[in-house]
Length: 236
Image 1 (tube, rainbow, N blue to C red):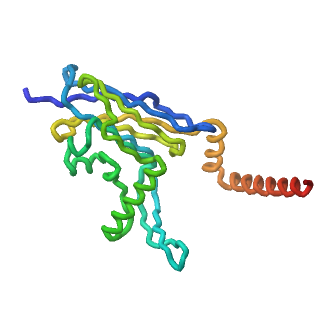
Image 2 (image 1 turned 135 degrees about the horizontal axis):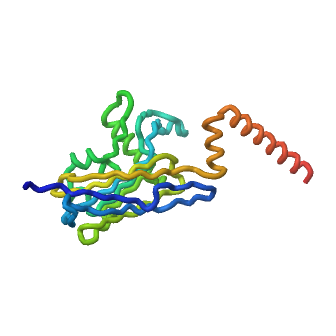
Image 3 (image 1 turned 180 degrees about the vertical axis):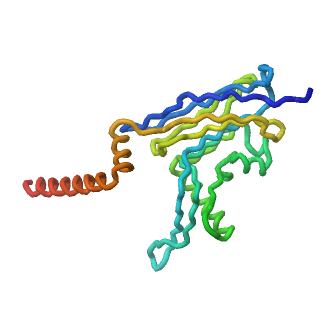
């Protein structure tokens, strides 16, 4: 009989992250096992974990200095930008797969498929894409840890990925890949739901479902607070 590919059995520490007032972020533990079809231990495999947040369209503008002031210059639109992206692996990516495989499975921030919109010079596109990734990285939303996956006895694996306080709500997808001899031989997916609860969720739902009323209330509150502050300082 020919050699059979292993089976991944993934799990995650929490399938729901609740964002409340004062939320400072959290840490997800992604873990599981690598088994062969017969249920025995599967050895000599590298593991890569990719955690992605909901995608969103982004317009990126480039600043240019003109007559001593900074103004908007060129811009580029991307149709599908992950709001969060993190990669962890048991070894450096360039030692376990080639460039083409890494690009297909997005094994790193340089391989994120951003889906640019419209026609743009390839050199400018590369510059904008690198700038967008760097901006997300400085915000703590894009990260990679080549060596962040720990494998125990060739069977169990685990990786820890931190979610910052500024994460976008929605469904996050955690993809786990088993790699052997430069080839992805197994993959599995789990999901995490990040949602606001309490007063924060009430505000978000109101803004989404009752936009006009939400806007009017926001304006009235701003006017009222401004008037109240003015009256207070007038008495002092």
